[in-house]
Image 1 (cartoon, rainbow, N blue to C red):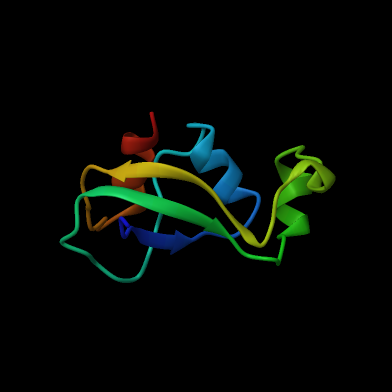
Image 2: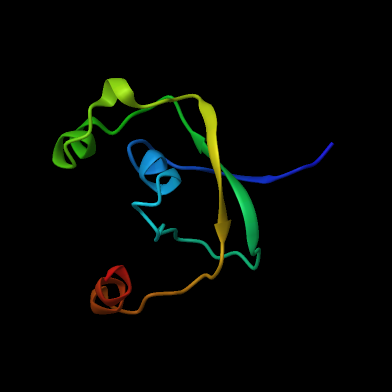
Amino acid sequence: MSTFKCLSVSQPFADLIIKGKKTIELRHWNTKYRGEILIHSPLKIKFDDCKRLSIDPQNIITGAIIGKVTIYDVKKYQTKKELTEDKK
């Protein structure tokens, strides 16, 4: 049996990561791990973000592992400008 690392990401952001529409995830902690991780969608949905992003919360899966992605790199941003440049 294989073991995988897993990251819980609030909805609607977990869904956007799995669909490849969100490629940067911000955290206050660092990891040296690179490779595949599972994305877990907790039960709670951020309804304000769904509304802001025009996402129907009824189409979102919660309380489950919803996919697998690869961590390629970790970067510490010093300024908002650096983050904005990477989002392009």
